[in-house]
Length: 285
Image (cartoon, rainbow, N blue to C red; front, side, top):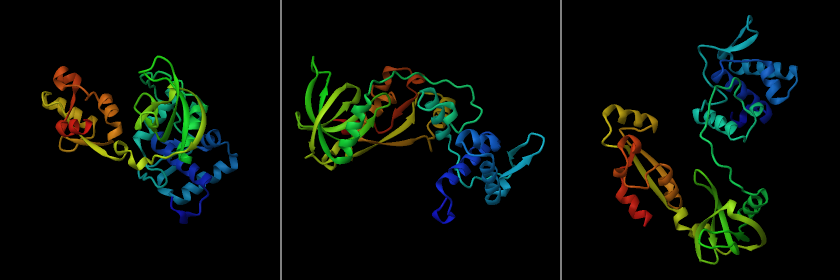
């Protein structure tokens, strides 16, 4: 919705919800709005009538089912359907991030997600990192590194949070090693003093620079298999380009299974290869 609509955000959100349910579920009624938003029966009726007034062709009332159903001429006005958003809600439900009653999905399909190990990030640690990033501060952390037998206090200057697909890190300037590094949040067991930071994130060249990964199907796959991979990755003309910060390159290659020689695995297992491997390897160096 644009600002000229004059709709309050709460009302707009409910109109988006009506459209979400119409697209994904095929129907919506007053009880849906009441259950999700906690509004009164009168307010739910008002919202449905308001939606009809703004997008009359999108739904019709089914008297026998006593619900509004999606019409054949449905065209979204308030909420652009997004498969990634729908699937991310399922993932959030699986991980326990949101409860079923907080999801906009009505009738949940049967689904399962590969389990992700719980990471012991302390809320106080995360708050301290976020605060330091916002205030451009250095913070003293008690950190257990892989290279030391015991944790130790060190000063870091965080400027961003990073998710590598499995763990959250703080991207920070380490005053001890005079370099920008990634600090795993779950390995920070305590924080204490803070002070103004000296380093600027703009000089973190690995963070600022971008690398393009040109992904193509493994050339030894059959034509049908290559076509399946092209569909999986939304490739155009047999290739897709994935931009990634150079600081994230190691994680991206590892997660995509591109961190080893493709010849080390069967084509059916490897499935994708880097078309621009040489240039990417140069930037990893």
